[in-house]
Image 1 (cartoon, one colour):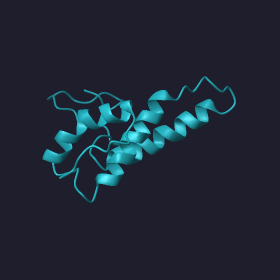
Image 2 (cartoon, one colour):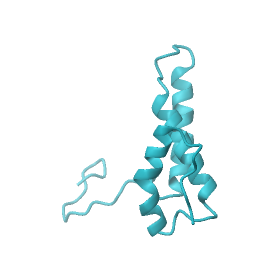
Image 3 (cartoon, rainbow, N blue to C red):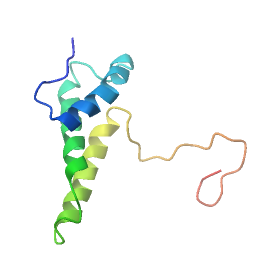
Amino acid sequence: MIKKPASLDPEAGRFWDRHSKRLKAEGLLTDATYDSFVLLCRTYSHLSRLDPEADPRTGIIKYVAMTRVYQQLAKGFGMHSDKPKAPTSAEEPDEFGIA
C-alpha cells in the first residue's frame, strides 16, 4: 500500500493529500512511480517558498529552473502538458489557436 511519507514538510504533505488519491485511482501513482511523486511533492513545496525577487542576481534564475523541474516531474503524472488543449467548441480557433 502506498502511504504518504512522514518526512514530507507540511506544504509537500498538502500537495500529496490533494493529488495522491486521484493519481492512485488513475493508475499513475504506483510502487514504480512512488519516488518520483515524492520528489514532485518536495519540488512543489520548495517552489512555493521560492521568491524570485529575494535575490536580484539569481532569484529569477533559480525560480525558472525549479519551475522547469516541477513541470518535467508533473508531466509523468498528467499534471502538466506542453501542448495546448484543442478547442472544445464548434468555433474556429483564432490566430492564437483559441476558439
